[in-house]
Image (cartoon, rainbow, N blue to C red; front, side):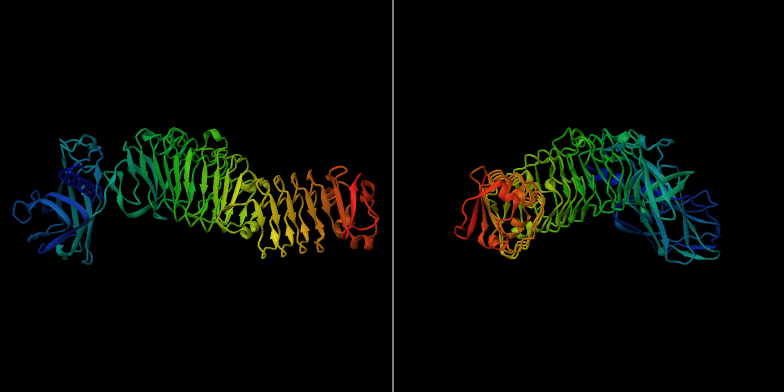
Length: 634
C-alpha cells in the first residue's frame, strides 16, 4: 500500500471478508440471561482492524442495540489488542447476536482480501456460530462481486457472531476473545484431507505478478460454497499436477514473476509452472520430497533458483523439471542452501543439451554430502564449479557433470571419497582442477574410470596451491588409486615413496609428458594399464622392486619412447612374449638402441634361460657390467 489510509482500509476489508468466511451460525440453545458487563477483547496480532459499528440484539427482535449510537463504542482503527465496553443488556429469548459492520476494499493490484475470525470463551459451555451476509463478505449496491470494488469505492459487510450456551447460563462476554487471522486471496481452490490434516492446491484463478501460497488454511462453508482462508486447520502440502497447458499456474503464466511456496509443501505436481516465462525467481523449501515432470518447463526468463531441500527423491531421465529454463534471460544462478545434503539424480538433466537450463553459476554450501547421477549432465552453460564450501562432500555421482562441454575450472574439496563413472565425461576444455586436499588424499580418491577424473581433460592439476609437474609422494602413502593421474599431460616426473605397495589400474595412463619414474623396493603390484600410453617415458628401473609380484595387463603398453629398462627377477621370469604383461615393458624398446639391464644376481640364479629375451635381444657381453647383464634389441 502506498498510503496509510489505503492500507488501513484494505485491512478492514479483509477483516470483513473473513468474518464472512466463517461457518454459517445456527442458534439452537436457549439463553435465559446474558451478562454484557465488562470488555470483549479483540486480539488481532499485528494487524489493523477497522470497525464501522458494533450492534447487539436478540434473535427474535427486529431492532439492534448500537454501541455507536449509545456512546459505548467509538468506531475507528484498532491496533494489536482492542477492548470494547459492551455495557449491560438482558435478553430472555433464544439467542444473542453481535453484529460487526466492517469496511471492505481491495489493494492496488485489485486483489480482494479475506480475514478469518475465531471466537473463544473461557466460560464452560459457551460456543459460537458465524454467518456473513453474502458469500464473499462484500455488499456493493445490492449486488455481489469483489471485482467491482476499488480502493476508491469500498463496500460494507456484516458478520453475525451468534453466542450459544446451555439453558439458564449467564454468559460473560468479558471472557470472550475474538481473533482475526491473516488474509489470503480468494484465487485459490484446495482439496482437504481430514484424516491427515493436509490440503492440496488445485487451482489458481488470479492474475497477480507475485503470489504467496499459504502454509495453512481453514475451510468454512457459506451459502453452500467452500471458501478458504489462512488459519491452522490444514497444512498445504501439495500442488496438484497437470499436463502441458493445464498446470495450476498455467492461466497466469504471462503475469507471474515470483511465487512464495509454503514451508509445509511436500509435493509439487507436474507442469505446475509450465510456460511461466515471466517467472524470474523460485525458492524450493526444505520439506519438499517430490517434484513432478516439467514443473518449471519453459520458464525461459528464470534467473534464480534457491534450493533448500535436504534430500529430494531421485528424478529420472524423463522428468525434465527445468526443461528449457532460463534460455531467454541472462542465465540462472542456482543457490544450494545450508539444508541441502544431497542433490538428486537428473535434477537439471534434459536429455538434449539444446533444452538444458541456462545455468551460469552454482553456489554450493557446507551441508552438501552427495551429488547425484547426471544431476548437471548436458548443462553446457556451466563454466566453473566451485565446491570449496562443501567440505563435507564425499560422493559425486555417475555422469554428474557429463557433457558440460564449456566447463573450464572445478574446485574440489578435500574429503572426497568417490567419483563415480564418467562424472566428467566430455568436459573437453577443462583448464584447471584445483584440489584443496593433500597429494596423499588425492591418491586415495576412488575414481570409477578415466572420465570420472576431471584431470583426464585438464591442462593443470593444482594441489597445495601449486601446479603439479614433478610429483614427489609423501612417505605415509601405501597406494595410488586407479585413474589417479590418468591423462594428465603436464606431469613430467614421479618419485614414489619407500612405503608404496600398489599402483592402481590406469593410475598414470596417457601421461604423455611423463619422462621418468622411480619405483621403490616396497612395490608389490602395478595395475593394468598403469602406464599405458606414457609415450614420453624413456626409462624404467625395477631393479629395487624385490617384492614386486604382479604386473597387470598391458601396464606399459605403447610406451613408445623407452630406450632403457632395468628389470628384476619377477619380470625376467614372466616375460614370455612381446604381448604378455611383462613383455610390454620390453616390446617398445627402440630398435638397436633399446637396452635391457638384467641384474647379475638374477642371471646367476636363473641363467640366460628366458626364451623371449634370447630371441628378441642380443646379449651384449658374456660378463656383467656394473652389476648388470645388458641385452640389446635385435
